[in-house]
Length: 553
Image (cartoon, rainbow, N blue to C red; front, side, top):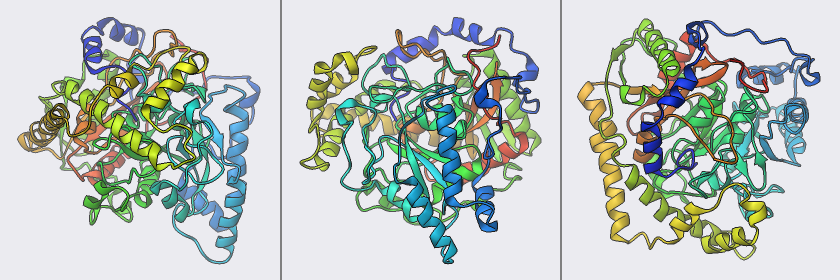
């Protein structure tokens, strides 16, 4: 959910300017054939015991699961049991991807209730009986904890469901459990390792186990890619839905801020936070987004979504949606990897073949010029918003303030800070109230440069409906000693503006997935979903992970 992947803005820009060697290392021995979406790699032979029998639900969809339950071939209980058995086989044993931080002890009981409703003729909708995994910063008023991965909240049980958790239950979904994440949504340290939390340990990338799943929705990305549930929910402040989706070969939707309520979600920034779907197909991600959307009195930002939240996105899932549509290419996000550039160029060619009118380049000229202001806003808002969240937990809250969390980490440094510290916490704690002139000036700069002079200006100048760019590079080796060392990303303009973006699998570099992002104006979520669907149908890049121990060069 944080500014991915846990670096201070200036440090990240400096790193990108110096990334030629990283780009070279990424591109060595990459064949053109591998990067082409139309030429998937065969699965290598493998004698590992947990791979001996095919998983019956591998790569299945919400529609297929519903058909199985309608026909009587499957039940919500039998589906939940198979996914839980899959967790037994590969999450804590086998390749041990360590993506699920806690299982829902009531999952089977809930599935049986959904089966009883179906038998009685009541089907709540497309998510009825569908297993979902949610990130461990989303409140559930049940027997599961909501900890943001921190030992400081390891016993915290929320007094009420988050709005989106309640919506999932109302829609008939079965919440199977909660996923691991980069602790505190990657906002504790400027030198963090994505996918690690004190409570959950390190999550692995299921494509190549010594590679990073990206953060902060690391566990959701790894688990849904590895087929531990039908669909999942992540959260993002800057990159934390789209990066783990890209790195794990998923579709990820980062909605317009205000489309999906944030009430009951452990926050970083009310300006930029949002939850969103992560799924193996665009159709499944869209199916999950619809019931999550709409006004919530507990989140004032959602008032603006009235009349804009769709009850269904089925009408935009048109394989011909790219035809005649002007698409801009943000070339300024290219250049960090020759292999990624090849994948992007092939993806753009595929869009052109599908009838899109390509405008190249169509750069967001303010990109990179407001990173400092974003960091300032996030530090101010994190302190204010987290203190408000902790206060809302009531008397039973194990920690009451950010200052309490800092003290806890210091007192438990051997468990909470064995690899990296809490520099980001300390920066935020030093900030004043949201009435501070420094905060107001930083927020004004963010809005002006990301919206008026940024995405809005680019869309208008080039007369394009959407902007495309590489979501990021292939996953880097997990490095607990030095922290994250990624190469590039394009998430910040949409994150800071609060505008939507959708990432879709676009290709592979040495078996590691790379996604392409569709970025648009405020409330263009449905349009972007349609474009992403048409691209997905034209290319069909996604293939399931095979849990390789390391990259085969």
